Image (cartoon, rainbow, N blue to C red; front, side, top):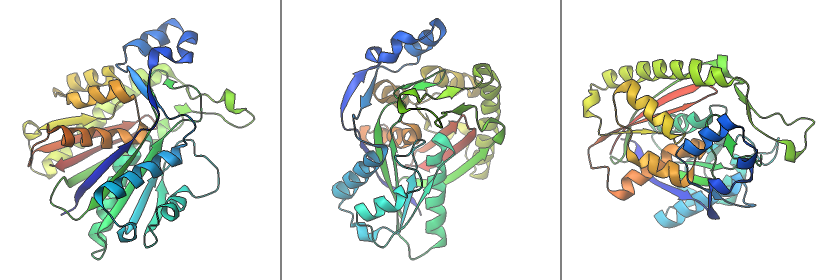
Length: 322
């Protein structure tokens, strides 16, 4: 069996009230209405700490607190920041070198947005299934925008933070199934133009707010229904036997939308973390699952279904047995 051995979250810096963010004063009326009702109260500001340093910090925290020998890691899956610190160079092998995981294979994945984390879980499981001598896979990610604008209209407000997860051969927190779909029609719905611009001019933009709010929302509902129905059928599990539904931390409106669409209840863990951390990109589902474990909300043997999507667009569901 293959499962999640440990998850650690690294959030240096201090929580900042979103109402104190400089960009709030420049928002239009419709933007301000979303900004103030998305369910986010604070975000962590890591200051000069980079996305790479956030990922490395989470890894070092995990290795130290679990007593894991870096030389025992067989594979590192590095989730690349949407705005990496440098072009051309390799952050995944840099991390391998810095944490002294000398025996590991290391590579990065990107371009699926929040769903990068779901793909990482699938790849980690597949790697351990295919390589009987391998025992440990380290997944890591740092969420930090180069842009000075934390508000992604009309989606969410970004916070800073790093996550690391250790995937091993264990019967606990068993990764039962992972299903992912993509659709390239939305490949550039969100983008940050950087060529011929200074750093101060960097700002992520939605090319079509209506298309995001209506067309993609409807497709997301249909995709998740298809993915979840197939996943539950494949594993002979009724929806009523899912103990907890998790979603990445986008907005309170997203929770309400999917709860209504599927007649489910998104775990209150999600809104709790949304309010405190904001959106941590691909790190959200790790944060939410770990919170459920540490709080004692998840009970041994329960089934947890993690829904995780991205406006690039990608949709994924992960079934875990606690």
